[in-house]
Image 1 (cartoon, rainbow, N blue to C red):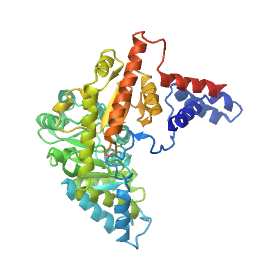
Image 2 (image 1 turned 90 degrees about the horizontal axis):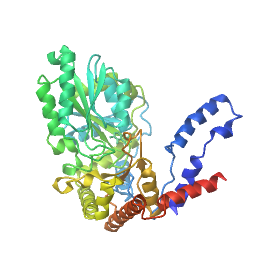
Image 3 (image 1 turned 45 degrees about the vertical axis):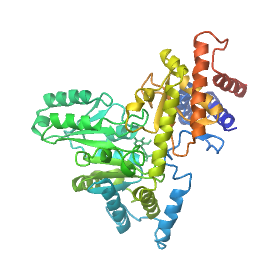
Image 4 (image 1 turned 180 degrees about the vertical axis):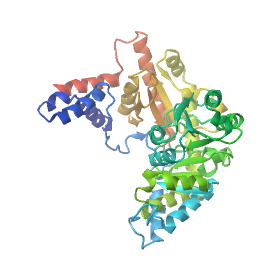
Amino acid sequence: MYSDTILKQWCDEHRLRGPSVKNEPAFYQNLERALDSRRQAHNLVSLKPRWDETVADFTSADFLSLTRTGRLREAFLAELALHPDFELGASGSRAQYGNYTYINQVEQEIADFHGAETAFITPSTYAANLGVLSSVPLPGDAIVYDELIHASSHEGFRLSLAEQTVPFSHNDPEGLREVLVRLKKEQPAFEAGSRSVLICVESIYSMDGDICQLQDLVRTAEEEFPLGNAQFIMDEAHSIGVIGDKGRGLVSMLGLEKSIAIRIHAVSKAIGALGGVIMGNKTVRAMIVNNARSLTYSCAPSFPMVASIRAGYRLLISGETQQPQERIQQNVKHLLELLTSDPIIDDARDEGILWIPHIEDWEQRDVQTHIVPLCTRSRHELFLFFHLLTNNFNAYPFSFPVVPKGQSRVRLVIHAHNTVEQIEKLACVISDWAAEMLDIENGESDKQLPDAARQLYAMQDALTV
Ligand SMILES: Cc1ncc(COP(=O)(O)O)c(C=O)c1O
C-alpha cells in the first residue's frame, strides 16, 4: 500500500543522522546537525514517491486534470507537429539571441487573452515573482504586502531595491489603509507622488484558499494614493484555469485589468505545463527586460517549453477547459455541503480539534476555490495526514514556517478528476478522524493517540531498533 511506503520513508528520513556522521569532515557534520533540527521538529522536506491510481489525489497541481488525462500532451504534440524544425534550446538570453519570433507571438496571444498590453514568459512563477520584484520597485519605493503572500514574493523582497517592505493584515482593506496612511505620514514623497508603493497580493491564497478582496483593496489604494503611485502586483498562480470566464483569473473576472499594474500567472498549475507569465504594459516589460537579472542574465525559455505553454493556453482559449473548471466548482460544493451537514465536524470545531474556514457561509459565495484547508492543532496535521493516507487519500500537511505558528493544517486540493464517490468517502474519512479525536479528548477512549499516529510511531520504533 502507498501509505506503508510513505510511512516507512517518513520514519527512515526522520531518523537523526548527526551521530552516524561523527567521523566525517566537520562540514558534513554541520550540515547533518542542521538537518537534524528539522528531523526533530518533524518537518524535514522529503521527496515523496509518486502514488498510483489506488490513492485519491487531493494534492497535485493538476487542478483541471489536463496532465493526467493526456489532453495537454496531445495538444502539445499537435503544436510540435506544426513546427517540425524546432530548435531545442534558445541559444541565448532574451536580451540577446534568445528573443525568437515564436516566443513573442505566444506572449502576445497570452496578453490578448488576459486583456493585457504585454506578456513575458518566465521559467517558473517563482522566477516571475523574483523578476518583477527585483526590477520594478525603485530605490525609495515601498512594498506593502498581504501577510500571507507566497514565499516567492518574500524572496523577491530580498532582491528588491525598495526602501521598506511592510505587511498588512490578511485580505483586510482597512489593514491596507492603515499602512498606506502611515507611509504617507512618514514619507512626504508618497503624498507628493514622487515615490511609489507596490502592493503585493494573491488572487487565491495558496494555503488558505480564500479569494483576494481585490475591489475593496483597489478602492482603498485609489482613495489614499489618488495620484496613482500605489499600484498592485497580483500573483494569479492559483486562479488561472480555476476562476473567471475561460479560467482567465480573478482580475479578469472582476474587470479590473486596467487597475492592476502587474499580473503574474502560473503555467505550472491548472494548465499543467511549466513556467510563469508576467503581464503589464510596455513600461513594465521594459523594466523587466532591463533590470530583472534572473530573467535576462539567463537563457530564454526553449521552444518546447513555449510550445507547451501555447498548447495549454489554447485549451483555455478554445473553451475546452470550461467543463473541468465547472467540475471543480461542483466537487468543492459537494464536499462543503457534506462537511457542513455533519454534526461531528461542528463538535470538532467547538473543541478546537478541527476547523474548516471554508465551510463558513460557503453558500453565499458566488465562486468556490479548489483549496480547502483542514486546520488542526499543532502536530495534529501529521495525524490527520496519516489518517487520510491510510485510507488512500493523499493531501499534504503544512506547519510553521510554511504557515503561521498555530495554524497547522492539511491542505485539500480539489480537482476536476476527483469523483463524487471520492468526495463522499473523503468527507466520511475526515469525520471519522474528528470522531476519533473527540473520543480521545473527552476521555471516551482508552487511546491516547489516533490509530494512524500509533501506527506511525510503532513503525518508527521498529525502525530504530
Ligand atoms: C502563489 C504562488 N506563487 C508562485 C508559486 C510558484 O509557482 P511555480 O511552481 O510555477 O514556480 C506558487 C507555487 O506553489 C504559488 O502558490
